[in-house]
Length: 80
Image (cartoon, rainbow, N blue to C red; front, side, top):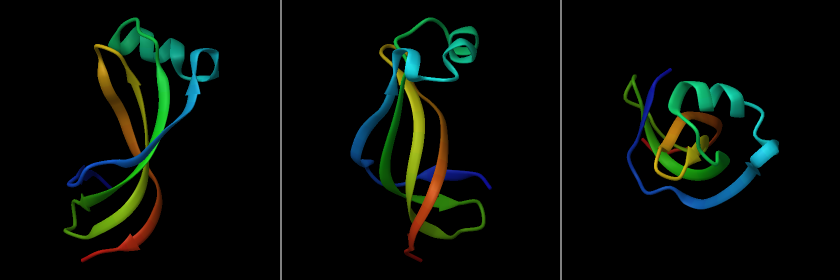
């Protein structure tokens, strides 16, 4: 199910960097060379069916390239 982040991402942590990023080769070929990091944080998101949840989000990011391949990993609480 697709979602859109509607609040600021809080509690941002790095959970992998350098050789610790499993998809590093794929990311380099798809989005370009970069110092990729796997990140996580908590934000409110709105799903395509209209539900709003507070969820833990994981994504990859690199300097100059930005945030890529966001996915919701854990729903914490339903908001609306």
